[in-house]
Each structure stands twice: as C-alpha cells, then as structure tokens.
Image (cartoon, rainbow, N blue to C red):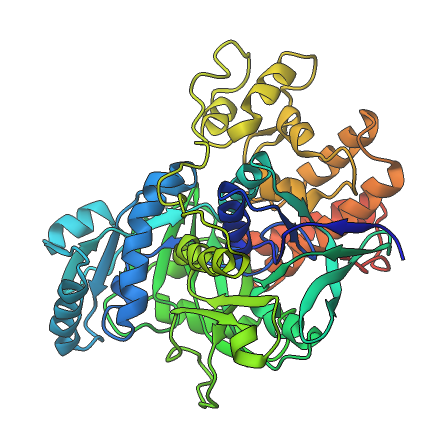
Length: 539
C-alpha cells in the first residue's frame, strides 16, 4: 500500500456539488480533500446546456425546485459573477402549445415569487430575429447563462486558497469501514496505478451519477436514476437571450447562448451506466425537428458537435418513468447513519447546477452538526474571485480579439499570463477559433501529472471553436514538447486522446461543413501525421 493521508472530511466528486461542498468546508475552517476520478467537471457539471435557471421552468410541476432555483439564481449572480452572463430569458408560446398552460404557468410563477414580464411579440422578434414568426406570446424571466468550465475550476481554486486539497485523476476503489462506520477511502491514481488510503471523520458522496456505485462500496443500496440528455452546439450565437418553450418541460425546448455559440437541447432517457455518453443521430434529428418549432431556420445553422451527460435523480420508490421528466429536481441529502445505520457517510444528490451552492450549504450544515463545529455558511455572501481582469494586458502587444477574450477568461492566472505574454513567442495564438495564446496554455499545465489537452481545453477553450481542435491540438502539443512541458510520448498520447474525444462529438452531427471538417481532421492526423486507430485506450 502506498501513501496514507488524513483530513477531517473527504469529498468524493469533482463536479459543481463537490466543488461547492469543498469551498463551504474550507470557508468554515474544516480541513477537506476532494477526490475526482478524472478532471474537474468531467461528469454532469459540464455536460449540460449551462442554463442558470430562474425557476420558471419548474414553477408548475415542482414548486420546491422552482423556489430553490430562483433564490440561488440571485445569489450566484452576486457571488460568482465571473462565470455568469446575465442574458435574461424568454418563454415563448408557439401555435402547437396548450393555450391553457399560460395562465397556469403565470399563476405558479407568481405564487413562488418569480418575476415574469410579458413583452410584445414584435419586440421579441426584433431582439431574437430567428424566432418563429407565428409565436403567440412571449414572457421575460431572469434566466442566465453559466460557464460551467470556469465555475467549477474557480470554486475549487478558491477552496484550495482557503486550505483545501484536490486530487484529480484519483478513483475511489474502496470505502473503508470499521464497526458500522466509514473511516475513509482507498483511491487509485488512474495514470500510475498507485493506491493511497485517506482517513477522515466523515465522507461526503457527491459523485452524481456515480453516487450509487460509491454507496455500494460501503455496502449501502442507493436508488439513483441516471437520466441521460443529449445536447448540440451551433457554430455561432444565434440568440442573445435564453429561449425556452412555454409548455410543460420536454425535449429540445431550450436554446442557451454560451460565449460565441449556442447550446441546444435536451432529451431525457434513463440509463444504467453513468459512463454512457453515447450519441445517436436519430435522437439528434428528433431534437432538430422539435427545435424547428421555436427556430424555423434551425437546419440552416451549422452544428459543430453534440454531447451528452446524465442527470443524477434520486427517487426511493420504483416509479416507471423512462423519460425522467416527472422526477423532482429537488435536493436529496441523506445521512446514512439515520438511513442505513452506517455512520460517517453523507450523500448529497439531485438538484440542479443552479442550486449547487444551496446543496453544499445544507450538506456542510449537517457535517458541522455531526462534527460539533459551530460555524455558519458564508458562501451566499463571499464572492469567488471575479474573472473580469480589465487592469491587465494593457501593455501587451497582441491581437485585439485575443486580448478581449483574456479580459473575461484569464481569472486568477491573469498576472502570470500577462508576465508570460511579454516573453518571446508566448503571445502566439495557438487556437485561432477561440484566440488562445501559448501563455494561457502554459499557465494551466500542471507542474506534476500528465500533459492532457482535454484539461487544457476546459481551462482555456482550446479546440472549442468550429474546427474542434483540427489545427490547435497538434500545435499545443508540439509547443509543449519544444518548451519542455511534455515528453514526446505524453504529447502523442494527448493528441490521440483529444482527437478521439472531439471526433466522437463531431461524427453524430457530421453533415455539410462539419462533415468536411471531420474529413480534414482525419486526413491531417491519420495521413499527414500518421496517427492510427490502435491507441484509443483512454482515461
């Protein structure tokens, strides 16, 4: 057995919920270590449409989730503004939708306190010209757009700044128990295979869709519904505000603006395997057909990729609901000492991306109660360091587009990036689509651990544009080798992994220009660079 570590609380899961719990613990002075099997945000937290819910979507069917969403919407806009664009949102009624639903929805929104404003159809069409010209009613709500990638990274970074630790690429292989009490976990480094034991007074299961697997390691049955949804990304931003269809929540009825693109979705299908991120062309075509009712010209826009992720829905009863639409989006906080007679383990699941902070607050309140700690939550007041960094990059000679992007993306790395940009070749733009410079890439390469283009992408937007890394993945890897940041073997592995992952999302939308892009990518990497198919065994 390898290294042994000790802390007060172990948090399993590096998504938004786990990140929120880690930060709340650190702000209350409780020592904690976060364990994540891959990179931060690998699972559900970055596999969604990035909608900051106003709660209006759930007002009719799930009052509790609606109330929680609206309250947290206001708090997150105040405390994590660097990862939120206050776009506002529209709920739009098209001819196919039930006339009677409008009044029911308005009454429900008023009951739970969500502000709704009706706007003239002509005004809506002026603001969002791609909307269906036959729409019959439009209402404005305080929806927003979340950058899931920056949010999870920044929340964990703030926790680490306050004394917490985070172990990525460490898989929990066993939950250690002693006399009906969880005392820690055994983890395995997924790259080296080395195992470590980490001991703590309390373990938090915040593993989302993998939560049932973690509970099972402790001998606890946990009924989770993993509800997989498919989403697609358009190559440019076709709407400035969030657009929702004014009906009971269903498939393919949300368009969310995200930086320079639009994310469209989603579907709902219950699956058994939380690692199932499969994509289906027929499912995509069904989405587009449904989305056409809101945006008639939808088939004229270029799709650059599709992706999927699982919503972790908690339900004790055996209710047959294959869509998952009728399962509450409310929070489930389980004390396994009370529920199962196993002390030292708490599960937090359900909820929404929008409600992650509230989920963390409730979890840490319980932890404090169990540990006898008297400390109140401050995450509803204390701001995560803002990403907007206008004071930097004024004297750096670089393309205006790249400089503009850095103002809203560099975050806590701003000073390091600015310093690097003044050095020779550091201001070279490696990714033209997203204007990513070598200085940014270098700032997020870890001192220890494997060189990983996917991790760099999540922190810089490398390869997220229309070409999906066709050119920049190889450039970044080559520069990493040239500057001593990666070995040739690490760079080759990273390129294989990046191309394989990007191509999965492109293949399912590969018609027209995107089909040509896939062919170009394959030609460059298979023919010109000689990368074969035999190395697709990836983390």
